[in-house]
Image 1 (cartoon, one colour):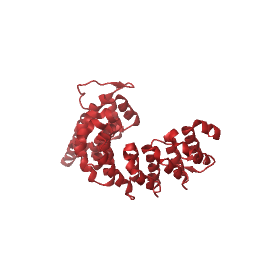
Image 2: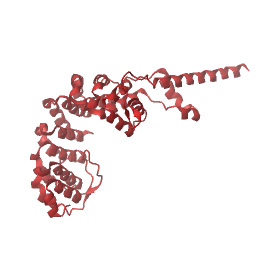
Image 3: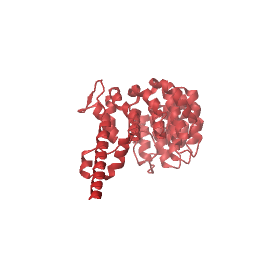
Image 4: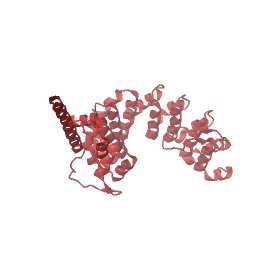
Length: 344
C-alpha cells in the first residue's frame, strides 16, 4: 500500500512539473504587446504575423512581414534575445511523451536557437526596412551558433548604409573560412561601398577552386557591377571552371560588370556544355542593345535543340533549350532582328 501511494505521489509530481513547464513555456512565447502601432496586413496584425513566422517560417508570414516593413521590426527583435529556460528545455524533452489530446491543444516546442535563427532570416529578407534591428543583429554576430552569426552578417548587409555602425564588428569575419569571408565582404560593400576592402576578398574567393560556395563569389562580384571591373580576367577564367555553377554565375557577373565583356560572352556561346550556352545567351539578353554584335552568333543557335539548366540567379526556368534562350536574347537585344530571324 505504501509503495502504491509513493508511486501515485511521484506520478502526480511529474504531472505537476509537466503542467508548470507547459504553462510557463506558453507564457514565455506570448510576450506582452509592445507600446507601439500594430499595423494590419491581410486581416492580421504585425504582431500576429511575426509570431506566426517564428513558429512556422512560412512564406505567407515572411511576405506579410516584408509588406508591413519597419513597423513589424519591434515584434521580431525580442526573438533575437531568446534563451532556453529550464521550463523550455523541459518542454522539449517532455513533448514526445505528452498525450495526443494535450499535444493537439498546445504549440510544439521551439528551441531558442530556432527562434533566433528565424528572426534573423526575417530581417535578412526585409532589407533596409529592418534598420531598427541593427543593434540587435550586431549582438547576434557574437551568437554561439555559427549559422546565426553568418546570417546576421548577411542581414546587416541587406539593410545597407543604415547598418554602418556594424562594419567594425563585421571586419573580423573577413579572416574566417571561405563562406563567411565571401558573404561578409559583400555585406560590408553593400553597407559602405568600400571596393578596395571587399574586392580582393571576393577575388580570392573566386579562385578557391574547392570551396563549396565558390559560385557565391562570382555572384557577388556581379552585384558590385562596374566597381568589380578589376575582376573581369578572373571571371573570364572562371567561365571555364569544371564547377558549372561557378562557371554560369561568372558568365552572368561579366554582363553585370561591363558591356565590354560581350566578346567573352560570344565565345561562351560556343561552349560544349548546353547549360553554358544558355547562360551566355541570358547574359547577353541582360545587356540588351549593347550586345548587338552577338546577333549573328545567337541566330546560329536558333536551331540548337540541346537542353540545359544553368545556374542563373533570379531565373527559375529549369530545363530549357538553347534555341529558346537564343531567341529570347535576340528579342531583348534587337526586336527587329528577332522578327527577321523568326525568333519571335
